[in-house]
Length: 513
Image 1 (tube, rainbow, N blue to C red):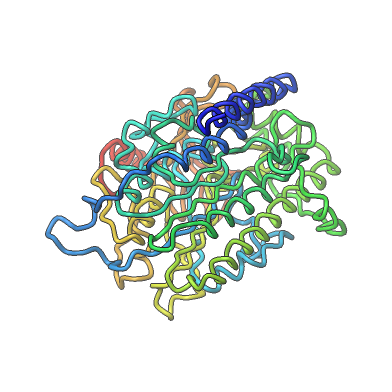
Image 2: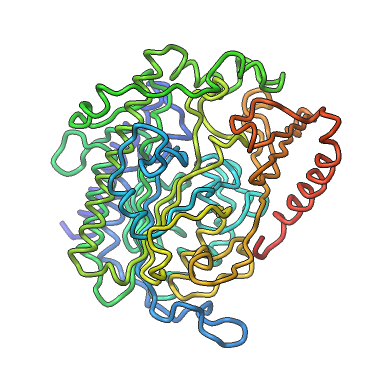
């Protein structure tokens, strides 16, 4: 049998397995949008392996490598870049935040070697939109990918950082959750790709049995680092599925067995706003069919359930922390720490029963604030180990990645290079930002929302219901006292309404915001 015939047989066999897995998931009632890639796990791995025998395109010098006036950008020697990207992981769920029992010793140490950003936020709090923003550096208003089945951002692929880095001579790797169709366009960009997500335990295609998704993330990342070409800079995206829940299941969170002793004797603090009174203060269109309310009842509606769910959630986080450390140690072993940038962040925050809600989507602090740690070998010594409280956004990640590669960002990107906050003396950074989220399913289930977010105040709108809200974040950090009807606040409300509308229009335009 010829090598081509052997490969075809393997692909056909794995395709049958993929269909069986997908059918099994549907029979279990799992949410298709969260599991659509799982059934294709084995098929993609085999396709990636088979592709190694095919001729690879020659790298060309990037047309983005110089600024308009011919000057090189600030990084003349391109850095290696590793993105550690968590899922459904909010800003205070790391040990360095000192707000919970969660243990993340590696990430805490990474913050001491770099910079931790306390007011890092997402412009849309949901998995796939945040990922499209990650790769394009654009708001949803521009990339238009409001559902995973509609990856409209692919239409601008040449201006997304994976393609730009490939053109610049980088060796690209992707491990874990992608959340959109893995098309020929995407497949042709990454030299190493292992795309999967949706369950915490997945079939182990080598050796049989099952493997935890975080363990596979780690394993695949180490393979990339050990087999990469030594004559090219590299960019590795490790997109962990954990600590995202396994939707459609009763238990939601499934850590590895060796983690179950963690937090066993601890008590998870219940949020101040996890009360029925806080739920009643939500706008009147928040009813029992609201998706956040439905998920609250699955995860948090009894004290025992809240403890069990949160401990398993924290166990998954600690597992990601341990796997991230092993990836870091491999880079250290290869002697690359002085030329490698590490970025740790996540796709969106998460309600842990605040307002008696679960999930994300809405403009509240628990939903929109996510952790960000950057370890950059270019960072001045006086900045190492410090904390920054400027508004950094997920639209900035693409600009930051290209900046580390010494590549000028395309004109369509709306973010800014976060390195300016530690490499320039006067970055003139933003002090407010616009938030947006579209309606999903129906307006009673996940209503559309927008917001103007500042450090002291937040102006929210619910356009499907023509409702506005105002919160004083300094005096009311849990967003329980709506000021929209206060007589003394009307001038401020009008000013913030106008600024909200200005930034909403700006989100439609190319260029940094």
